Image 1 (cartoon, one colour):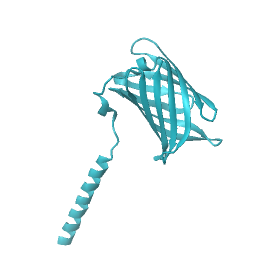
Image 2 (cartoon, rainbow, N blue to C red):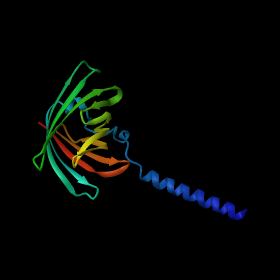
Image 3 (cartoon, rainbow, N blue to C red):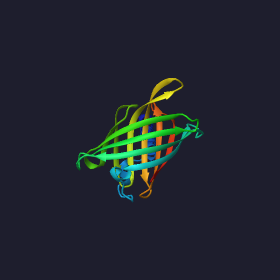
Image 4 (cartoon, rainbow, N blue to C red):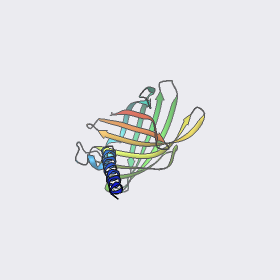
Length: 186
């Protein structure tokens, strides 16, 4: 009986330590940034022309692709029913080009829904403080095939002209790489 109690205590102790370690590895939440300044309003920042400069890095951190983006952004509609169109023209370091047109709808409490031609279903996002978090599944062309990859996309407003963006790409829960961008509003 004493052996059973000792084993149970050890298991309980190991479980408690494991849970504490996992809690320390928890990812940030959008609510962590509620009081950060300057306050981001997606409708104000993504309005007009924005230039972006980015890199895609693989799992090891090696830069695989560099690119620039010119974004033409517009919002229409009555307050509370605004719809945004973000027209992104990509130019990659190898000379190839691509285009993605986002349609965004603002909901209650800083939440957004978005669609684009290469996005599977809807993207869901939320702004708090100076931060916007965006989650979606992208149909990504790779070596003549299209694969579905998940994006966990974080944007941080630095000032009225500059925003930084870091997105983690994954498939089946495994990290494939990251996209890092800087946006500069004209």
